[in-house]
Image 1 (cartoon, rainbow, N blue to C red):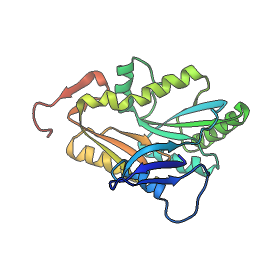
Image 2: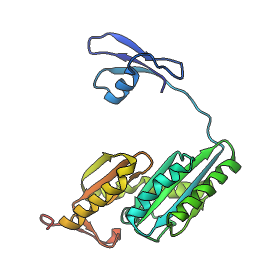
Image 3: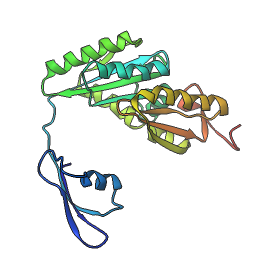
Image 4: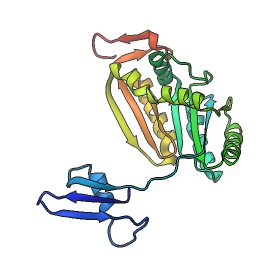
Length: 240
């Protein structure tokens, strides 16, 4: 997003940003207005930069033996100097519910959690080379397997399952916590969430965007037994 036309509460119209790609003059009122989500003014016009669609998209899927190992592999991936456009962290218990909802199969059934790095670029050979390099990093970090969804149908199937996790959990969700932490603290945060799960006996399936530290935790009104969405037991009283 490059620019906004905004009507303030006073009725005054202001122009923020513009058609230029970078500005270092003064405070970024454009970012402030975007972050306010309409509370500081009404956006009446948006100036966008349209980027060409990438020629190649590659999706990797790597299951790990522990949740901690899954999360802790992310810094190693980023330190490789290759920046995926997304790195998703998903737990098996949450994915199992989404599988049932969309009637599709998640390719990785090993381990309690998986990492899902996604790469794109203008050249297929280059992107495949990057995917191979990241696969080597994940293998060195202890991945149980490295799966490559190199065709569009397989990629869309994987993403369709991932995108429906919240919808699959929503009927039994009391509250969704959308938390942002530094990337270096994701593993500790997720471990803390699961310590609360063990301490209080409340299911807290967790997933999110591992590359930018955005983690989603569902506080459940029901139990997920062995990650099987077919064995959801609603509680008739407070969870003990």
